[in-house]
Image (cartoon, rainbow over all chains, first blue to last red):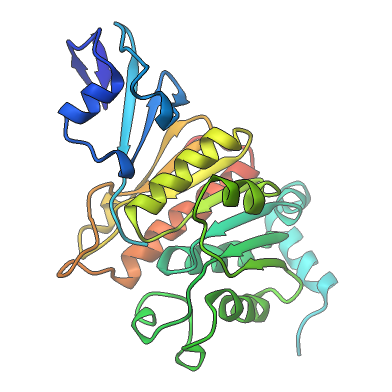
Length: 64
Length: 212
């Protein structure tokens, strides 16, 4: 299981970029934390999710 | 009459205790964006006695800012860096202010402008700019604390505004959902609440309280 924003998902083996794309995230508005560290955007395509990964996808909205 | 530096320091020391006052008064905090969030964050931090603020915004005070930002009608047209500096010096006359009237556009700007800060407050308006700054700070300046904000528009409950810790160095304030757009504008109290969360988290970090 891969846990993303608190929800367990059967997506081990998927790349982070493919997951984010399928989930509809706008890459220009997010920051991704994986197992306690921020993931550089240039690595989204290279990271393959594995069982036990815990991620938080922060999706920013406007206003300030 | 304006109190002396010693009088003001003494008052803060009495209130905060010597150890905490020393940490606050020697801290350098950057505020990126001086709108509804940033201007209110800066006012809170100046009142608390933060030693140095780095204030960054490319924009000028507009009449449409006055309903939520810490500027006065007489300051319309001034650079926000200049107007806010004036207002902060009325509150805290001996504060050290470094201002940059520029847009933080890329990673080079982040390195150049923010390397001397201990804590960085993200207070931009646009989601893309928030994302850019967050990613750049956490990737390039991993020893900094970043306190960002997302979701504070409209008249939703004040109680929905929260501080969450995402990584050991990254805090996120707001309700995470309320996107500002036509018909869902920013209201002074809710933006101030979110700004207060950010300023409070900054002070907590200086007090070595790292829980959100």
